Length: 296
Image (tube, rainbow, N blue to C red; front, side, top):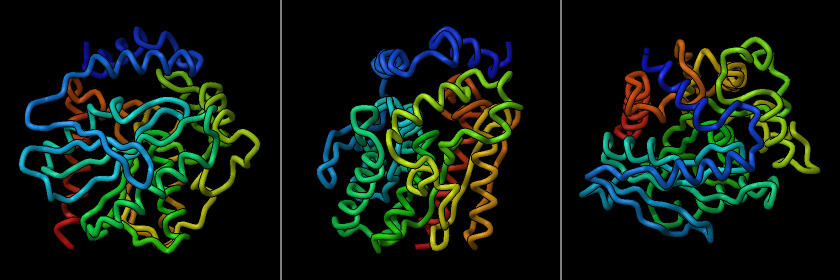
């Protein structure tokens, strides 16, 4: 069995189907997080930034290293920093940089714009510690990828300094869920469907507008944002979200690049332990980020 097919089989056993209710998935996520074993050479430390709970992932000897400001995925309704440790610990070990993962509030208990408010508050507090923005990168996966761009928009609008660069892995950047690939990739995406994402998006947006730029950055003005790297799998319903984000970023004059990885699925990076392409993708992000830090 090919590694990518192993991942597909694992996901089928874990979630039981892409339309599994998100509150059930929230419970499954907690079980998955509890099973993760921290690798040697890195430690996790609880903290706060701007009144928001965070988790620091710190490699040995990296107390004053640059910082990756990380926003986890989970459709705005589930997920924690612990759930992204497969990525954050590997990134920290490869770059010897610190990762601060933001434990933003989740819907439906805390609907939009709670996640954006928390992310901007934490980012502003990080800047207030005195670290140069040129030694910060920001990024996330899935909803965290969309939240990455939304956070940059909101931070820019508040007059906060932009970080050195940003990345978005399989980002959810259009909460209307009207993109063409929700239909053309429905048969090959093992994780997400239009229904599953609409359910999560409706819980997050509540009475708000799904086209609001801080909710769906593909509808926003992206001028003035830092260089952006987008990773997306060829076999996921969110493919068009990434393609449109890239095109809008280009039109706004941003430095942007996109990688469409075949035949990868949603956030394949998380499975690097059994999927070589996952490790390669993390390496590409690490190279992108460290190259921009070196320019500081």
